[in-house]
Each structure stands twice: as C-alpha cells, then as structure tokens.
Amino acid sequence: MENPKPESVSETAETELQRRLTELRGAVHTRMEEEMNKRLREDSKPSEEELRMAAFKENLEPQMRDAVLEMNRKGYGTTSSGFYGSRNDFQAIDGYFTVDEETKRKLEAIGVQVLRGPELGVPLNKLITQLRFYPDVADLGKMKEKWDAAVALLPQKEGPAAICDRAEEFRQEYDPRHPSLEAEREAYFKRLREELGVEKE
Image 1 (cartoon, one colour):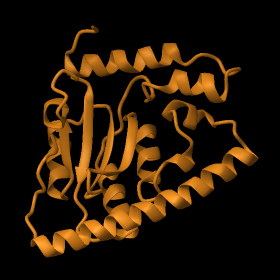
Image 2: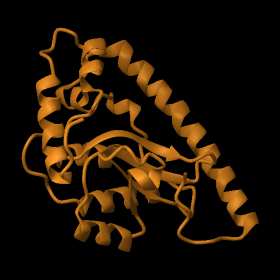
Image 3: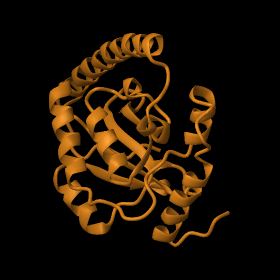
C-alpha cells in the first residue's frame, strides 16, 4: 500500500507531471542500459564497493547515484532505488538500515519521508526502511539536489560496514574468485537487528 502524497495538486497538473516523469524515467533507463552494456564490454568485474552494494554503479539512476554510494559509505545498506510507483510519481531508496528519530524529523522537514515495513505494506519485515519523496517537477537536477541534501543529513554509522542482502549472490555471479562476503553480511545484519531490538528468525 503506497503512502499518500504529502500535498494535493490539481488532477490536470498531476496527470501532466506523471506523463513527464514517465517519459523521463524511460529516457533515463535507455541511457543506463547503454552505459551498462558499455561497462560489461569493457570491465565486467565489480569493484569492492559494487560487490557490497550488489550492483554496478551504472545500474543506479543518475539522479541518485551519488546519494546511494554515499549512503553505503555511511553505513546504510541499500537494496533498490529510483523512480517508484505505478505512475513513476515518487523517488525512493529502499534498504536494510535504520534512521533515528532526530534525523527522521530533519528529513521530513525537507520533504523526505522515512517509511518502515508496515507503512510499505510488509508488516512482517521489521528490518526494511524506505526514504521517499514526491518530485513536483520532472527535473533530474532538482531530484539529485534533494537526494544529496537528504543523505547529507544521515549520520555516520558505527560498526560493521554496510552491505546489501544480495551481496553474496552478486559476488558469485560476477566475481566468483573473490572471497565470500557471507560473514560480512551476517555481521552487518547482526548490528542492524541490535539497533532495532529484533531477534534473528
């Protein structure tokens, strides 16, 4: 179940914005596909950072590429990001991480929502968090400014470095000779469960 938009707009304006956002997403993904094909032709081996994210940098939408990289460097493990919604009407970054209440208030003050499992329609998932905002214009530059500002508000996490839950599977596919990442993944999720007070199932 999607969280409602924070502000109402006229139906005509909203329809036009959705059309522009859908067109923009299509253009972005066409360019990303070209970048990804070029990357795989020239260098299909992921970097250490890409292994931990379980994604090539070229797989990240340009308006949030820097933000997603910085989140992971700060200790927030991400799983997916980009245009979201059936009408591509909101931007989001999902992941297994926590956001403290003070930071949540700061993010909300700049128009970025912090949503947890129940608000995302997955009440049994106690570890997932989503950062979300609804752009009021189809402009990648403005979207990037919003994401960069949001991530700048996130404090640095202590403890095990961030890692995606799919990191080991990604390693096996793209760099099978690299040492296993399973122990690092377990350490990160142990820290996450401790932050949330959640027992391992």
